[in-house]
View 1 (tube, rainbow, N blue to C red):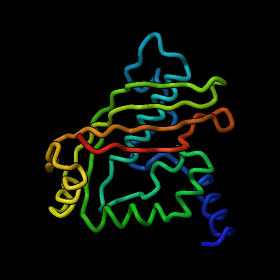
View 2: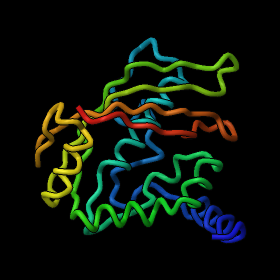
View 3: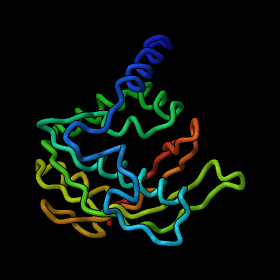
View 4: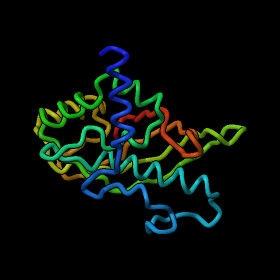
Length: 187
């Protein structure tokens, strides 16, 4: 992919980026009107960041190979991170993974462990556990998943499991966006 192709793709994503069409992610949903549990002592930024993280986990984990949007979470990323994903063919790789393995997964819940802000309050690192359930998939997918998991706990069809996500978020045009993402091994 050349630079012009990447820029065109980023512009397409930014212009056409909408929450997941199945309603699993609602960008208009804030902490006050989503029924999301927030602590009374959370700052406004903490509430917004937690909602961003929940929406990200939902977009990433509420997926079905039969009607898959390979870029459901793209509207939550910074432009720089989005460019990297496009360069690395993330959308096609996601679609291939889900289609090849016939994966249907479901977001269950999340638990926030920490939010650490930078001195200027323009960036933060969020650590939280995301509970997911693989509703169905080919057996080879579970074998590979459990092999990567080093047999700590066997992940089975229909059984929820937890993964620790670490997100670097930052303000881009005064809106919190995801700049980097890491997932631990599943528990």
